[in-house]
Length: 127
Image (cartoon, rainbow, N blue to C red; front, side):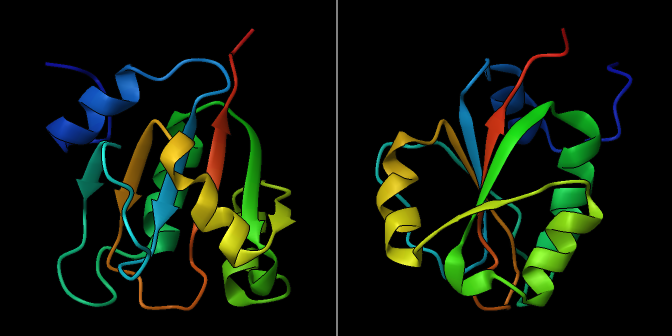
């Protein structure tokens, strides 16, 4: 058995495939999902599993080099959740963020019901 706090086998499998500069999107349940990109769906009911919970676990388990939020999330609780995890998100418009989705290696869909609770995480390396 692996020694990890992440129990979701499909999520672990996709995370294990990531390399330097690959991107992961943590999405609210309303974000349109790109065709052809692996999606791990953690949504259960609106509000569960939440964006902040998922981001907290990912921040402990991924080397995150860069992060990007929609500029519409600037100054909101969503940006606060990101800052609480030690991230200093860059910003792009929500439309630009949606346009960047097909380049992601993985989308993690949460049950989050807060507007603009979507972030692109760029993977780093531990050395």
